[in-house]
Length: 121
Image (cartoon, rainbow, N blue to C red):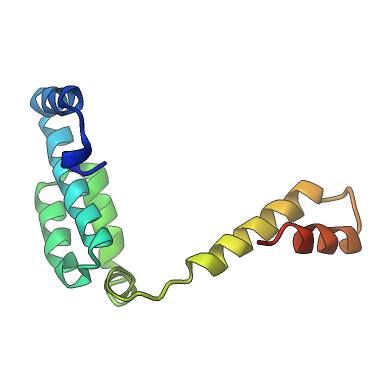
């Protein structure tokens, strides 16, 4: 999924071989690269067109993903357009839950609290 300009000549040849061998992989790769461009360049306004292309031309897993995105058309374009994100908060929630699960049944709340506070960045 790296940008084409960062691929070595051998990687480009291998990718071409895979695309020629399996048209579904070629379509999935092209759609994935296009979606990556939407993400990296914050082009949420083009999402609906990408969903249409994916639903019409994509292999089954990509069509399924596009259908999933279509279910939340209010939030997904905003996530692809706006600079604000809840990613840091979600990351911290995930870290705390991982620590909590690792310590389940082994320690007190006090020790869990100390471990959470000492491992925060």
